[in-house]
Length: 369
Image (cartoon, rainbow, N blue to C red; front, side, top):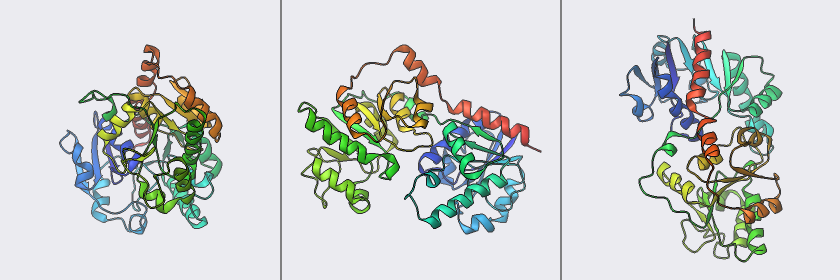
C-alpha cells in the first residue's frame, strides 16, 4: 500500500510525537510519501520505501484550506490514501482521507478561547469529518465527546497514545531520586496547576517534614504575563518568587520552572522525581502519567473519567478532582514502592504505537480504491 502522510506538525508537541512514532510502523510493509520540511522528515529519509515532498504551508492556513500547491497535490495523488495526524485537511485531495481529532477541549471547557475561536475550531472539526473516510481519536472519552458536539456519523476508531520511544531506551547515566515533585503541562485552566499549587502549600503547612520542591516543566515567563492568579499562589508559597522574579532553575526556590528542555532532560526529570502530579480537570488522553510510569516513577492523578479509562489498573493514585485537600493528603501519604512485575508488564504492554498503527493500517486497507 502507498500512504501519503502529512508531517508538517512534527516538532509541534504531542501531535508531532504521535505521527513520528507511527511512521516507522507504517513503513514496515508500505511505501510512504512524507510531506513537510526536510528537518521534520529527516529522521526517516534514509529508511526504505520513503519518498519526500517539501511543503511549508502552515496547517489551518487559508492557503492550505483553499489553495494547496499543485505540485504537492500531484505527488499525493500517486498514492493510495492520505493521512493527517490532526484535523487539518488540504484542499484538492481526491484520495481516501483519514484524520485524527485528539480531543474537543475547546468545545467542552469554557474560557479557553473566544466565541469566534470556538466557532473556527468547530468548523475545522466538522470539515475533517465531512472529508474523511474514518476519524481516529485517542480515547473512548474523546470519542463520546466528539459524537456529542459534532454528531459524527463517520467511522470513529480509537487509537490510544503510548509513551514515546526515547523514554524506553537505556539511561546513559544512573538517575537518582531527588526530593522533588514533577508537573508537566501548561497553565491553561483545565490542566489544574492552581489545584496543585494549593495542595503543595497545604502539604507544607500540614507537615513540617514535607520538604519537597515542585518542579514545573514550563517557562516562568508565561506565568508572569499570562496568569496573575497563579503568580499570587506562587508568591504565597515561595517568598523569593516575587512577580518580577519567579525562579527559573533556581536552587533555593520551592517552585522551580525548567523553561524549554530537551527530551533527554525531561526523561531524567521523570526518573529523578519522587512522583508526578497530573491534576487535570480535562484531557483527551493525558500522556505525562504514562511517560512517568515508563521510566519507573509513580503518579498521583485526578479521578476524571478519561484518567479512569486510561490508567485504571496501572500504578497510579487517584485523588478527587478539583480537591486540593485530597491531593495534599495523597501527596503526604505517598510511598515510593518499587513496581511489581505485574505492574511493569502492564505499563509496557497496555499501550503501544504498534497496536495503534495496526488499527490505522487496517482502516487504510479497507478503504483504499
